[in-house]
Image (cartoon, rainbow, N blue to C red; front, side, top):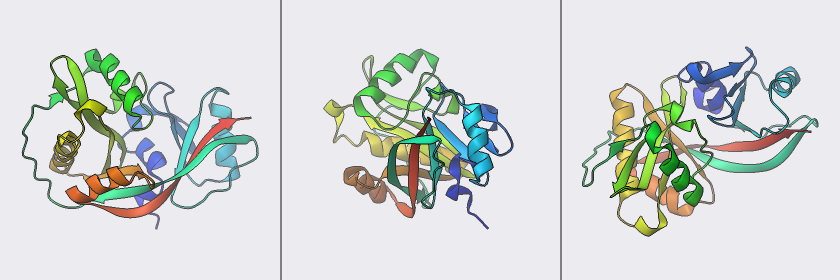
Length: 225
């Protein structure tokens, strides 16, 4: 039986993120201004065709799988890369040394500015719709944040972990990660995340907290021909 995290986007779209789901029984996607992720039930030719018919030409689609996937020729592969999928199974012990603030719609411009500067992954105008985004401020400036993204059954993904370059080395990412992990565990779920296999600095931070690599995942950024 396939693990829920082997096909995280599709399983999120039929479970924890069902409120953000669009598409058919076989091919699903998040709204254009929420996230570029798409999910296919069986990764069949028919699934890919249904997805093709659902999306506009100018929208990139990020498809994730635990094995390499042959992509039909009517899709352009704009980019392909690998990430480690890491899971947190330790008790989250969060001891704050700085105030962590819930982020709301009024903070969207600051969140977009920070993610544009740090590039933690796709972050759009309505990505905040996933919920649970929290940040650290220096005065009126958002200097670090993290939130939740794909919620596949009882697995909740921590995402958009980023720190302004001028504030690195203060332990802000660690505190935000443990804060998110504690919240997820309190809700009865298991924290996980994705990180580029080449991002050695981030991997070291995650492993230092207690995340372990579950599997290498394949990401494909697709666009209709």
